[in-house]
Image 1 (tube, helix red, strand yellow):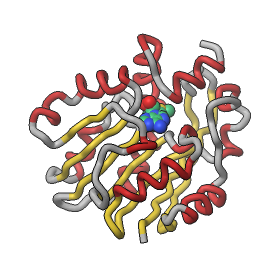
Image 2: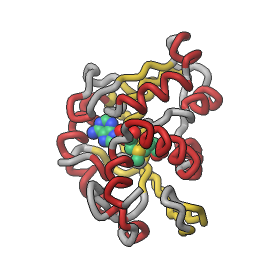
Image 3: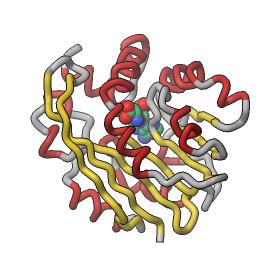
Image 4: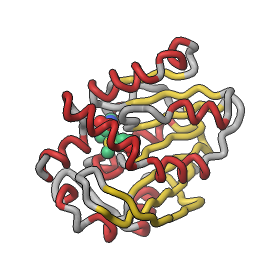
Length: 215
Ligand SMILES: C[S@@+](CC[C@H](N)C(=O)[O-])C[C@H]1O[C@@H](n2cnc3c(N)ncnc32)[C@H](O)[C@@H]1O
């Protein structure tokens, strides 16, 4: 797959190629999810919203950490929604998980609903970011948290597939953007490791997670 196609598939996985990308992301983003799960302190009866869940193979991990949760997912890729529904049929049938195939610019949820929103490898595609962040802010409870997982700009800007579709951020830029949208940084962790990227190249990956709070 050429870098332009890869970039557009990463933004919105579509068709058979998109399903393959979803599987590859599940492998290649494992470290970022592990870091994110370490940073969440899930409480009994929390309502969690995950934005851009991809193939959704990680959803059972939420319930391993805290069995009494309700998790809602939203992703605008029809193919990812189908994949995630197929992988999580039991959680959906038991009303622990509900999945929505929609856009984050108009979230189909009431105000002040969620304790935690999670968005891993999604911030790059929120354009313009303020429209989407305003919606995320609206659906979080006062004091609710947003956990953003991403790769800082200097660590990925040399990769050809990030040259289009992606808006890249350095940690300080991201914090300023979030603060302008009523979300204040409370914690951040950055970790680097070696891996094979989705286009088969050996790279050093820097996983960054930033936890921000609705005031
Ligand atoms: C790069 S994938 C990341 C998937 C997964 N979170 C991971 O880290 O492996 C980005 C996901 O976000 C979804 N997405 C991107 N922009 C979106 C938007 N505006 N609304 C809803 N979903 C979006 C895409 O469909 C895709 O499944």
